[in-house]
Image (cartoon, rainbow, N blue to C red; front, side, top):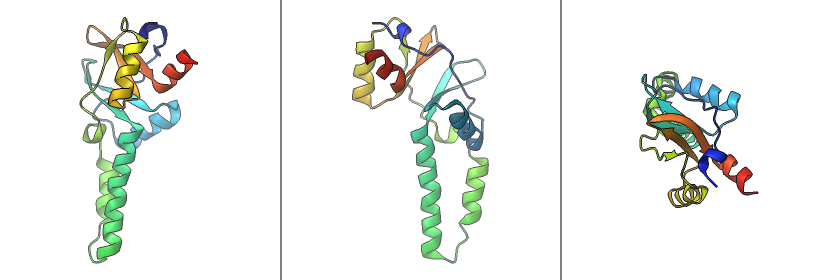
Length: 142
């Protein structure tokens, strides 16, 4: 079986300059777990996942914990500023594993399992033509 047979062809992408709060809305509204980040030319420059968003939340929460312990410093403004100004480019994963549509699902599984990746953009001549996520793989195998 080939990736072209299981990939999602309608791909949601995002710009690296989008604010994280807006990216969070895309995750919620589209009910997806990963979004390829593309530049103005439509080339993949990164990927942002729910895991990346959770890591950002963890960093903000850590600042809150620090403020609670230190008390004298006002980290709340720093947290608010970080939330309001942070962009996709600040937390996206820049090393993106991609695959071609004619690669096998077996190869896809090997990469997903060994690299612990759940979302892989599918490219043709450097352009996104699809995306394969863990849900696509589960539906294909069961």
